[in-house]
Image (cartoon, rainbow, N blue to C red):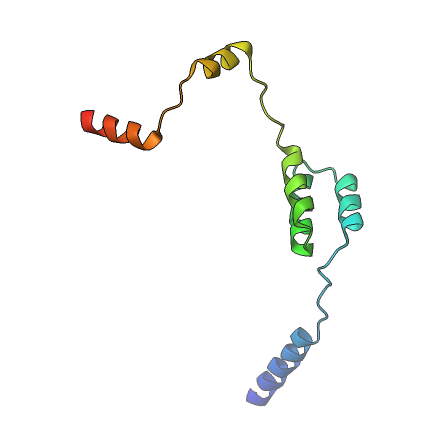
Length: 101
């Protein structure tokens, strides 16, 4: 019985070792085609991950942000508020404020 178990383990080991690994590198045109064909909401993040693992880092960064929704436009009130602000040295401001608190 022990011999049977040993033979089963050896044959299982050979099956696991003999499996061929799938090629992980994909060209940018293939990744782009997969993104365009995909219908998932997070398709840009999946594509960005594929770009990054294939070494296309700039494409990964730009693709990741495509589904972000963009930036909010400043209103007139926000612009006026920012113009009224006076810049201060942060280190000095924190030290002065910490003395009072």
